[in-house]
Image (cartoon, rainbow, N blue to C red; front, side):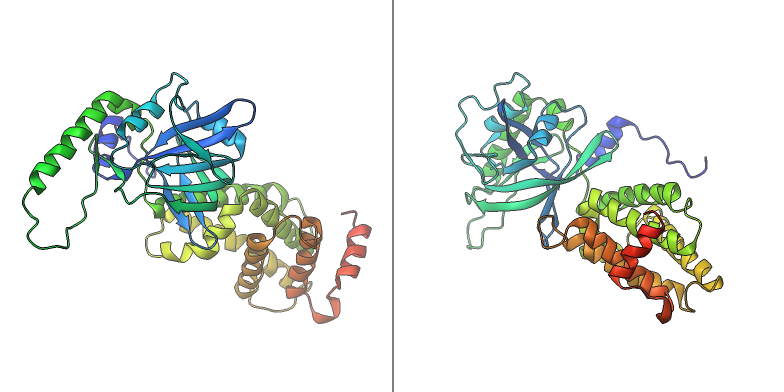
Length: 367
């Protein structure tokens, strides 16, 4: 009970996070058999440069998101400050979102809306559950800047725009009038849209928080699978093989996690939550415990268990990150080869297997 977070009132939550500015984007897709679909979000964010990944967070109550998900791809349309009417149109639930809207297809076929500041075309890489929202990770296929117009923002229940400092001297006059005009426009757009309609889609989280959620969700699933499959194996070799295969299976199911662990995890070292650190320690301990049992029983050679674990797991995440279906080797062949590699890391030299010998041993053991 002492570890449970206190209940937070919804009104307080929205009010506090409403002080954090977000951009406003329209997520679009072209759904086979039913045509284009779109939804307004305030949660678009970048995740990774190598490879290029972005994210957004649709509410589970959204009726548009399941349609977008079924298409397997989406395009992020970053709205300009003058596109309040377009935002209002796509926030409606009357099914006429694209009525009168000009658009062209992106490489995935998803609509690029005319007049947007920028667009980012993506394939859906991964979807994670997160409270009353989902976290969608997209792999960027193509992107471009369409206009120099400043982007639309949403802050404290109002639409507006960012104001860049004017580099030329003597242009202070008229700034207040421009600010007032922009605020008035934002109020009118917000009144037309209805604050609740947009706030229901606004789930403000930083990039670091999104990455942390992805990693926590992945590790929770992985450790649960360890409990189900690794403990059932009796011998240390079989347990180590189960660790490898369960990890590869889970990294296949959660491809974005492999990327986040290698490219972004280090940036969270200082601010990572106790939950994430605890899960990572549990993950490491499962591997080292198996290696230590094998060492004590004489099956594995005397070695630093933590160093062996680190070496195997670093290699495992690299394999999972860079493997792509359709290459020279099938996924099953890569998994078999890496399992042999992992066992050879801890086996005495006279007991190490070649891939062919490993296959024969697997046949004998009924794998």
